[in-house]
Image 1: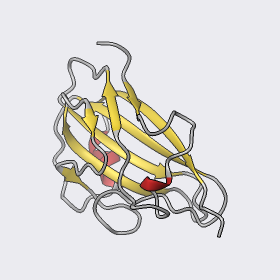
Image 2 (image 1 turned 180 degrees about the vertical axis):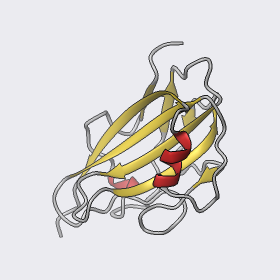
Image 3 (image 1 turned 45 degrees about the horizontal axis):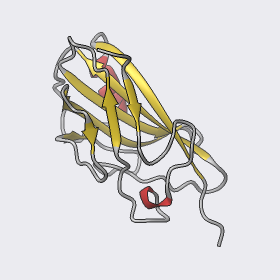
Image 4 (image 1 turned 90 degrees about the vertical axis):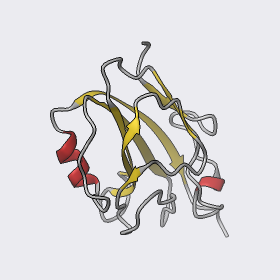
Length: 149
């Protein structure tokens, strides 16, 4: 397989996320494209967070046990296993920075196992469960700043 990569047709790495995927739009997750998953992977996991949030890193999305053959997470995807974000909800939490431009980091992990996690698990539980099972990781970073009124 080629290099393990995560891209989006909606924005380039380091580019701006379209408003459609934020609180200024309909707030659906962007389409994500997966390439080069290691041959020996058994599953994929995803964490999306905002390291620029005022109170510390804000987790927007956690998902795990995605099929290793996944090539695309379509716009508005709801992976089979999603966990709790920092807002206390399950699923994609759209970018909605309180001020300034924030970075939103989508990190995809290739794992050598399926994870046994409770449905309401968050990023800490996911990170603990992945320890010792990560075969590869890749990131895609998007930027967003709220519209000016």
